[in-house]
Image 1 (tube, one colour):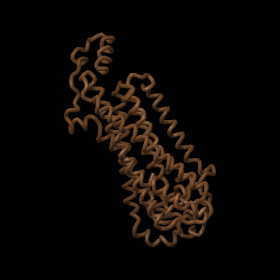
Image 2 (tube, helix red, strand yellow):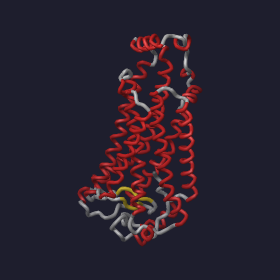
Image 3 (cartoon, rainbow, N blue to C red):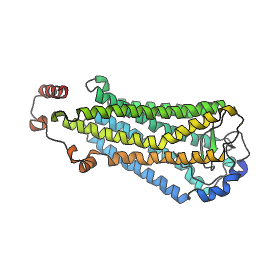
Image 4 (cartoon, helix red, strand yellow):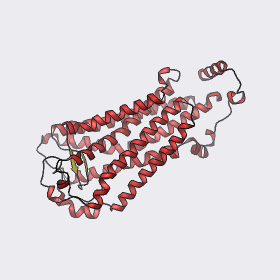
Length: 363
């Protein structure tokens, strides 16, 4: 997602209010945009950093997943892998449209007369934007039930089921992104004419889709906050229990640190945009379709918030890279695994091991 930092296209589209053009006046912003919008080289380097970061995180995740036997940790890594793949593909897909435009400077109104390219880019922005928020809420919910109901069979998720859940999130986000193509809302070219997104105008369809997109994102962030808060409180209460479950607690702490980091980044990067969308469409409701073009200040603020959102895809992989247990143990040595009764007596009967584990947890 992101990449809304290019020069405006041919100003001949400015007067068109139909299809996906005419939401902003390109002729008025052309001169100022030339000075305020960053260079193509900056945007290209910005994108490459994000792609390399996600690719590196994906390699580390795949390497870690092969060494794990814990079903809980494996399912969590599946969700993380789905998040990293989503962020990587989001940067790759949007870059494949934006970077060529940066250097070719094609006229959108002439090249994309049917708005197919704009609809594709708008769909990509919505799909790859909503997926990380929903995946964050899904991961928070999985950890909430895993920590607060550790002995429930339903909380144990296999890799196959975890991938199925990731697929459901992708499918739901895809359906959401297709709604403007099917007639609910519109994807339109946004200031400074280099990217397409949902339309913040007071038309009924646009208002419904804008509120649906924004409120769903806000709900996902709030749900993540509630689940993570309860999970962290629970972990703090049981963290100083008997050492026989020390290894498991350390793993839970590692996952929660990563999950809280993902939630904080998503909140900082996404909440300003989501709240801005809700405020903008609600303030314009009395106009009832009379406004055909966004005010210049609204256009510029939308661009700023979209740039903030782009950082979410770049910072997400570093949460896992930096907040792994190997890194945390160097900062906080007490996280190093301490010997338990199982490591001291590895030949214990399996049934006795299970009995001791249950008793140590219950005590």
